[in-house]
Image: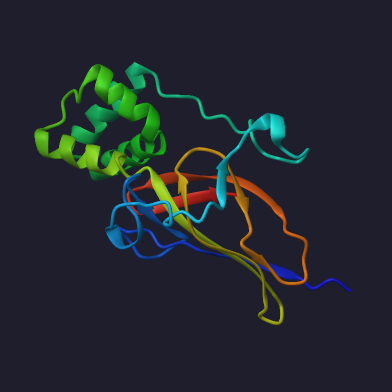
Length: 188
């Protein structure tokens, strides 16, 4: 009889301290210190469709980039006084982080006042997440563990388990997306 497994993903977002990882800038390591080669234990690798297993999710869930018109509309919403409208704009801009960084460089900040431009740039600079993952059976034994690995937000990665107990190391791939100032979403 196989043990039933419960996937326990512990994420800790810097802004909310609740969730499954820490959102960090690409040059930031543990505790805000500069990143080093020891900081990423090498558990994540960029997904290459040519080397993937049959069930790998690479290439399946593409995200349509924002157009320059959508980008301008979102900046106008962010500059508006309506909190609900601003919240949707923030979530969308952060979700499309890499695309928005390019659009911001190409088209500028539009109607945003300087303090909001600085805030948006700071939030867009947080491009990596520190991920912990444990698969625990019904008796409380951690069967698969991944400890504090750094992964880029919005890019599919292969995750390699650092330790397993009485299991063949699983093949895990997925993407972590930013869905708000203090929210991350993972598809593994």
